[in-house]
Length: 437
Image 1: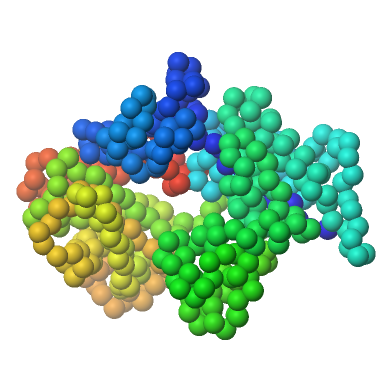
Image 2: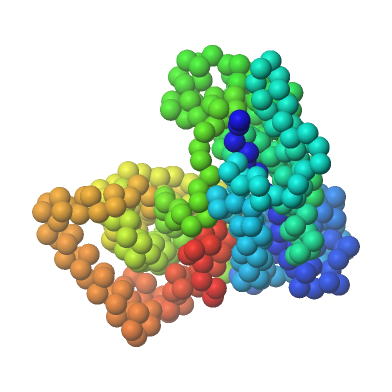
C-alpha cells in the first residue's frame, strides 16, 4: 500500500490568531502589518475578507488601504503565533510521530503507520484495481477531515489539508481548497487532478524556473511530467531531475520525526532602515552590523565554517536584488562583511536608495575544514580567537561594550544588537530555535 501524507496549512494564520486575541475583528477585513515607523509597513498576512478586495502579502499599508478602505490594520504578535503553532502541533502529535514543519503555519504529517489511532471509518477503506490495492479517496479525505476538524473544534482555527502519497503532492493538495477544506491527490486520481495545473503551482518552482519552463513550452505540470528527460536536465542540471520526479509524483523524501532536529542550511539576518541608505560608507557599516550577527550565530551553531556568502538588497521602490559568491571557508565577521560589500559594489550602481539589507551564509563544513585552514593561515586563527573572545565579553557586559571602529562611527548603530532583537518572520520558523523577544 502507498504512504499517506497529509499537508496541513493554517488559513490566514496571523490574521486568524489576531481574531482569537481580538474577537471584535471577526467578519471585517484585517491585515497584519509591520511598523510604519520602522519602514516595515507591509502586509504580512490578511483575512479572507481582505483577499476579496485584492489585498496581497507584501502590499504596503497604503496600497492595502486603497484597495480596501475599511481594512483594519493590526501589528504582529509573533509570540502568540508561535504559541498557537505549538498548540496545533500538539494536536497533530496525537495522530503521528512523523511531523515536519514547513514554516510556522504548515506541516507535513505521515500517518501511514498510525491509521489505528484515527476514529473508525464507516466507508470502504481499500479498493482493488487491476489486481493492485489502493486506499479509497473517501478514506483519505476522512483522514484529512479528522485532523482539520480537530484543530477547528479545539482552537477555532481553520486548516486546509492535502492528502496524498508523497510530500510534494500533499502540499499541492492543501492549496486546492482554501479555506477550510480537504483535497485528495491519490494514486488513482493524480493525473486528472494534477496534470492540468500550472507548473508554477508545483513545490520549489519559483518565478525564474517557471519562466524558463514556459519558454520550453512546459506550462503545466502534465507537460513537465511528459517532457523529455534529457531536455529538462540539460536546461536545469541536477535540479531538472527533481523537477521531473516531483511533476510525475515520484517524490520519495520522507517526513521527518517531530523530535528530529532539522539540518541548518543557512544562517542570515536582515534589517529595514528608518531612512534610505545613499552612501557607500553607510551601506558598508550596516553590512558589518549584519555580519556581526551572522558570524556570532554561526559560531554558536556548531556548523563550522561557511563557503557561501549571499547579499540581499531591497530598494526604496520595494524591488529586490540578491547575489551570492563562493568564498574561502570562514566564520569571521570581517570576511563575511567584506564579501557582502564586494557583491554590493559589483552589482549595484549609484545613485543608491537602499531600504533594507540582508546577509546570509551557507555551505557549512561542520568542522571539516578547520584544521587545514588553521595550518594554512595563522592570521585566521588569531582573528577567530579574537571574535570568540568578543562574543564572551558581550554576553557578560552587553552588546555595546565592544564595537568595531566602522560601526562605532555611527552612534545609532553602536548598540544595534540585531541578533538579540531578531524576531520570527513568515516562512522562517524553527520551533526549537525560537526565543521570544
